[in-house]
Length: 320
Image (cartoon, rainbow, N blue to C red; front, side):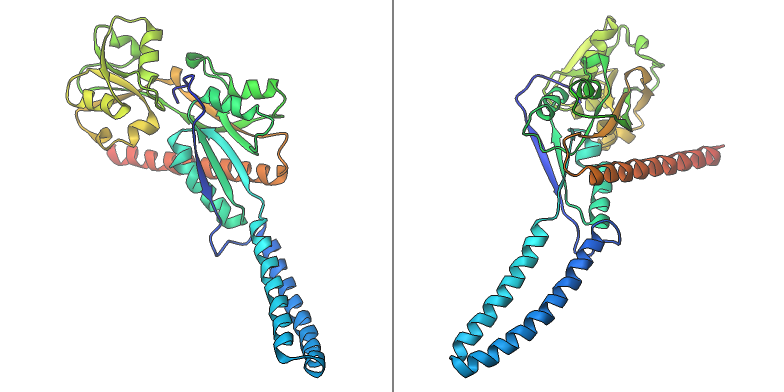
């Protein structure tokens, strides 16, 4: 999530429908094609038999068999062309783990299987680089995931796309919390309590790498920076006592095996939460599919959030 002015780099994730798609969307179109293929087979079979009889009378058996094989090959190629012509949905977003290897990727796989639509997710390192890529006239993006704005990094993603006329509107998709991780028992409850403390930071050009550094700089507090080489090393520094605290995005923290250590405590920093939104590009040739994908994604994420809240409430009742 740390936006730096680096050359454009990205990872593409190609999601293809399984061999057994669910009922819905383009599945009906596939069934129609199969029925048409069967009808064509019957018709061609009848024609070939008649041609075969004529060729047997007027030509050699080899020539008749060759023409029959050619007709069958033509039918197979037409079926292959249909499969290759399935319209692909291009989704572009930041290199957040929830997109590249998390819940959004899994929901997209379910959507692809259910509606028989290939989905290509492009995760771009650097949100400003993503914005620049979308403004390119050759962009193939159908759907974009981006922040509305984020003052800490001077980002204005969706607002900028609206201003450029690339989207008509956008709607909320998910939030990424900023978490302060501290040594257990230090009594730190907010970023103001970091005054005089040691804070692990990294200045590396990687997703999430500069969050702690930039928040510390924004607070103007008197802290001692403990420089490390990665976001995982930031957490290691707190766990082993080299640092008193650090700040990480929630998805990076939760993906670390040491996130459950009893040596640490976590404090939410709501003032640094990043809300992410989703929109269909005006220029997409797949407007209906793009809107259907957005609706599917939002409903699935909402249901996941509802289930998570239910589980959390049940856990609180059990503790009581």
